[in-house]
Image (tube, rainbow, N blue to C red; front, side, top):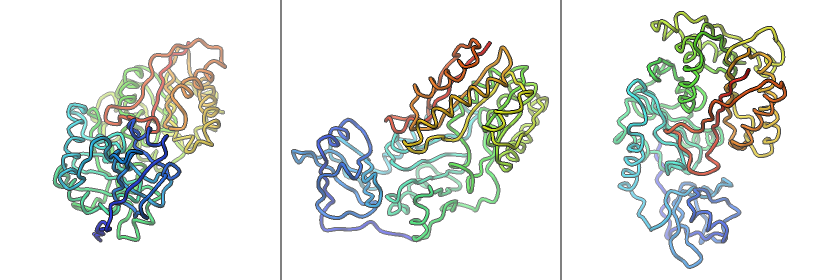
Length: 407
């Protein structure tokens, strides 16, 4: 591993903010944007600690500096002054992991251990798949601390293998320093998907090349809910990926499950996940089929295919604020189109992972789509983030799901 030592400037990087930004940081928000910085005592380097002082020259917060990002400072700590040293990092990690105690049942071996800013680790996610940990980084600010991170995680979390995943925006910068997306930075090489348990079901996670860190762990609670609603029904899992909702529906007693996705690779993964669970009588009994198609287009046609339960779990439809209105219309149309395939009575499950669409906007869009059919419906429940994916500021709130029963 190529090591880069943190810079050792003669003076600490000191920052002062606009009055509005100062209030925002004091309230607990973890981001400082470039336009909110009123004064810097010198130029800073990526990953350097930046100390924020208030208008009365008192310590306000300390965070990771990134001169190339509009999100200029990611706050690590606010309030009373602290020394950010190796001991601080160790205690910080131990406290973060301790918050997961009791959240995951004994039949589950995969969960999120660190959820970025909401756990005080800005721009960093850590997921566990059995004995494998996957570290995903979203900012160049962590590059300088890679040796420290690897050693800290190895010593405290004790993984057999640690895999580094990098968001697209930082891959080039990390590559210049000897790091690659999917690189094993501790432990033995991984040459096949990692098999893990979720509520007693076996799944594969492609931790080297797969989306996110290899699986969508955030939908675990919603998958469990689908299992309770699927008995003796025909189920459509649209935007199925590798069949998470499909497998839970099958174990819940569904007569048939159709996994619909545009990716042949994802559908092959769904078939493998079903094969991993053939020792479960309900799964073996369920008729599982795959449909490779654009889910938006498929739902607009094929009116002869009807189901008792339909799951809509599309990828993010609004990755930036300018796409928000279009995403709201798309969620409304998805619900309306899906309803044409839903028997009466039936259940529609609709989820969104678009952070730029609020929960109220999403739930209202789905209900408008349902209302176009003039069929009566009731909301069974709405859900948000899973306990291990807790979000403690508005920009981190992306996941929402609604369960509706339709006559």
